[in-house]
Length: 141
Image (tube, rainbow, N blue to C red):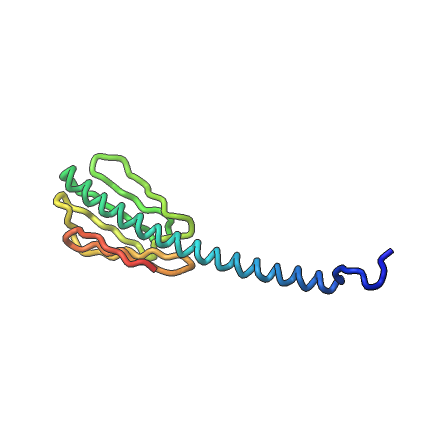
């Protein structure tokens, strides 16, 4: 038997405490998901910039053109070397190319035209620029 005046929590107090804990967990989870999404986009941007610079260097080394193809809303892109099998590069989860783009690195490392590659996911958009000289730069969200 419980006597009057003994310590303990009322049912109402327990419900309020459980509700507050639930709200805090939901807020933390949504912030975590947003942060993770933003980090995936940043990683994808750096990955693509590095892969484009590597493709430029591979074209120079082989003395043959190398074509990089992005398709809108796809989670990967294709590296096509002359006389070699296609290489498919997968982007991090949730990141896609915003538009179609085809970039050809010529044997001296330059491109036929300057190109801008745009990546997107729910947290934002990032761009990678390839100059006619073949230099690669990017901006992070």
